[in-house]
Image (cartoon, rainbow, N blue to C red; front, side, top):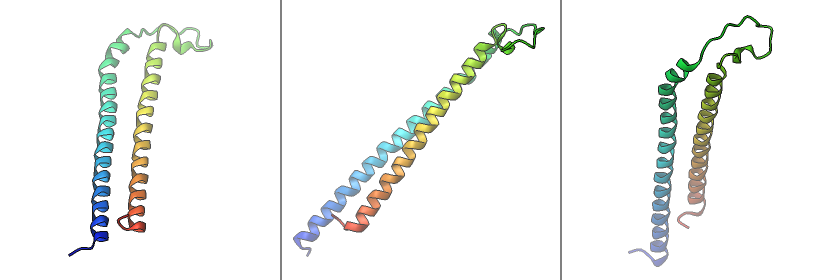
Length: 120
C-alpha cells in the first residue's frame, strides 16, 4: 500500500507526462504544418515559373556597358520573383528550425526538472 505522499507524487508525475505529451503533439502538428507550407510554396512556385518565364522577353543587349542591362526588356520580373521566393523559403526554414530548437530545449528542461525534483 502506498503512502499519501507516494500517491501525490505519482499523480504529479502522470500529470507532467500528459502535459509533455500534449505539448509534443502540438509541436508535431506545428512542424507538420510548417513543412506542408514550405512544400506548397515550392510546388506553387514550380507550377508558376513556366508562365512567368514565358512572359519574360529577351531583349537585344547591344549596350552591355550600361548599368543593369540584365533588367532591360522585362527580365526584372523573373529576378524579383526568384528573390521573393527565396526569401519566403528562408523564412519558412528559419521558423521551422527555431521551433525545433525550442522543442528540444523544452524537452531538455522537462527531463532535467523531472530528474532533479523527482515527481514534484
